[in-house]
Image (cartoon, rainbow, N blue to C red; front, top):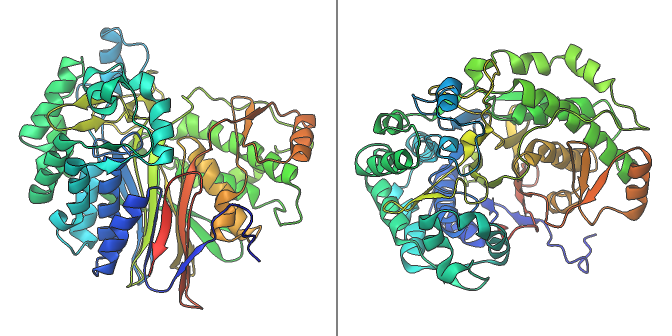
Length: 529
């Protein structure tokens, strides 16, 4: 029975349609579209457009997007909406310019944004309502103002110092020289104008003509190698690809987008964990230890091998094979930690995720990101587009699969997930939190299938994340578990900020119900009818 004194929210139940996002205004916008007969894709576009306005440090039209779409008839298809490096970008070209590191604010960390291409591809193939209807709430919030919610305010304040390094970003996001507080209102008229243009003309309004010229020119002034031709090449950049999957639990399959996303790491963790008992009887310390050791193994391979699919052919098939998984699983010792896995990536990243199931039974798992908090911080003032920093994932190492190169996609941390059974979607799900996402996917699925937790319980459970020899844990991890983990050799760090966020909708066909959850670490909610 649910503990109503716990301070948690219960799982949301509905029978016809549902949407779960990390921001209440996004959820409301998507639910409005569903109530008008819109499809899952329509609701997702309306929701992400709103969140691109009201949660600018987490997402935006200057970012990238991935999606898993499961039509009611069965099957899953993956959409890669990640952008590419400029045609003039290469390790040699950047080194000739004296670039030795791809930092967050470097213009070279900006790849051509893929989000709008992805939204428009989804809309053309599976949407029903016109874009101007889907963008209506987002445009209104941009032009007329929106309230700052508590978690957004906290994160905004935490990123104030980096925003201040860009004059245009500071002018927009630090009114009066400081981050807005919860309950204050902000607007972004320039972004509203760009959204209006996209609503009227589609992706061409972003990748061709005046707006593309403004963004390319702005990046060039900052020292970037971008051209209008690079932006134009992104017009049809989003592409449908074949998802990858792995079995887990009794009769279930977990689907992820293939590389260049890190969904492969999530599947590796799950396949490794599948060889261990993770039932409710297993101790908290054992669960955290197993998850930590499997994560370190999977992420070591991720950092060495995952990149643009053209640069790592066959890597998913190889790493998910029984031979490789059996070898990797055998390396785990339940009594002690393994040597720290290779880790030389930046730690924290920012993203939004949402799930939708419409009245026809179509399911969508959708994620949109600008990578760091406020992306690259580089704001083109006339378009209002805040450009992401995804290119900072590239390596400046010749021969590395993820080395920067002309028209190449970098390794991505953002990953939507889809749980299926007998070829039918059971649950679109996702976990925000940058590098944590693959580990978060595995922990969430294990919570739902191994521990038989409901969605909200699985989301609200204490989180942990192992990297660089440190095991990060949330304060809600028990004292006995902390002592046990330390005795096994883990170096513990109790985090001061919530670890990631998540949303999911479980389809209960037997009872004709939808079960929705939205992480209490964020401001959002799951709503349906």
